[in-house]
Structure formats: structure tokens, C-alpha cells
Length: 273
Figure 1 (cartoon, rainbow, N blue to C red):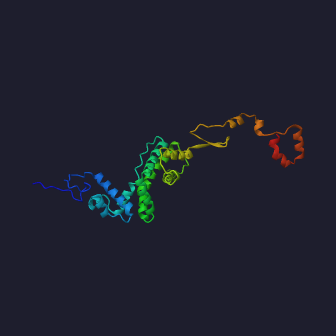
Figure 2 (figure 1 turned 30 degrees about the horizontal axis):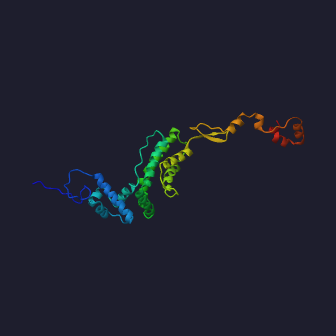
Figure 3 (figure 1 turned 180 degrees about the vertical axis):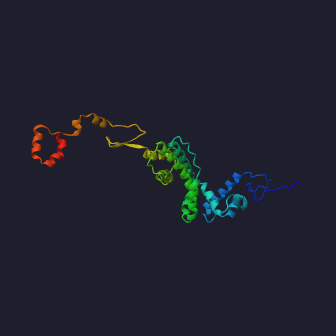
């Protein structure tokens, strides 16, 4: 008679069902998701101190060995669970800086608009100060890799001329992420359809390449046709003597020159010529 192998609490089939376990690693993704969700639930209920492998295993319906095969300790498990609060950013296509940044900010907005993720992330920010080592690992393994993706898009924009050569990478990254984080604390905390576009367009407005237009005393974007006001056009067409101001000529000029000393003549010379 062939032995029957029954799935126990230490198998990778997820919650115990009493069914026969098949070879390989069936339902591996479902098992990992159950463990991550159990970890986040415990974190939300009890904070960092309330998370332990035994409780996570019991809530996820798996054995401790199943967890340890994936994460060697509680810290790594917590990092994986907290990292899941942020959805992966899309791979940049490299065609348009605006399109790439917009796709990323839309993902960030979707995460913040998810009330469950938002609550857990708020708890992470509140509890994180008590655990500086864990938060340093979180920034290193979760936050910085995401920022690197945004930095790569901005660097590409600088190389292609879409963005100014003196663009501050760190300020640009913080401007995008900070706007999303601060949105929920504003009077209108919703993430409507055009919020992401407004954030990106507002940033690009300040980072677009600009060239000085000395005659007009203004800066005109290289990618935007120069717009000259009607008043400026009229000034350009005006006769030179009108633009230069009033001139003193004839007898009046002689009388003025006679009354002036040498230094004052030099000072007012251009006006009297």
C-alpha cells in the first residue's frame, strides 16, 4: 500500500486543508501573500513589538518553518511586509520624461488613496522613530530603490535636454513624493484624476530649459515659442528718439551746457547728444 502524505502545518500549501500535498511548491505566491497579510494585520493591531513569527504562522495557517525558509528572521519578515505597502513603480519607457514621471506619480497616488495601505503606512511613520535600525533598513531596501528609478528618469531628461542641466535631483524627487504625501493632509485630501498630472506639470514647469532674453528682461523656454506682448511690439517699432527719452537741442542745450561743470556734462552727456 502506498503511503498517503497529508499536508501538515509545515507545508507550503497555505492554510491547512487536510488535502494531499503534491510535489513541488504549489501555491507559493498565495502562501507568501497570506504571510505578508498576517504580518501587516499584527503590525496594525499590536505594533512592531506585537509581531512574532509564531503569531504570524498561526494567523497565516502555515508552519514556522515555511516562514523561515523565506525570511531568516523577524526583521526581514517585517521589511518584506512593510515594503508591500508600496506598489512597484513602472519601468520607465524613456520616450518622455513627463509620461514616465506621470506613470510613477499615479502609482504613488493610488497607494495613498488606498485607505488600508494609508492607515498602515501612517502607523509605520509613527512607530518607526522607536526603531531607528529597522527604519534605516527600510529606507535602504524600499525607499531608495524607488527614488533611484525616479532619479534615472530625471537624469535622462537632463541628457536629452528636456530638463535643465543644473536640475537638483534630490529636490526634484522630494517635490514629487512630498506632494503626494502632503495631499491627504490638505483641505481636499482626495486624489482625483488630474492631481498626478498637476504635480508633474508643476515640477516640469520649473525644470524646463530656459534661455535669457536680455532685451525683454524675461526668460523664455527653449521648447516654448516666445510670446511678445503687444506693448513690447509697439515699443520695438517706436522711433529711436522716443525710446531714448527726451532730448535737449539747440539753444536750450547751449544754455544748459554753459551752466554745467565738467563732471555734470559727462554725466548728462548721453541725454544731451
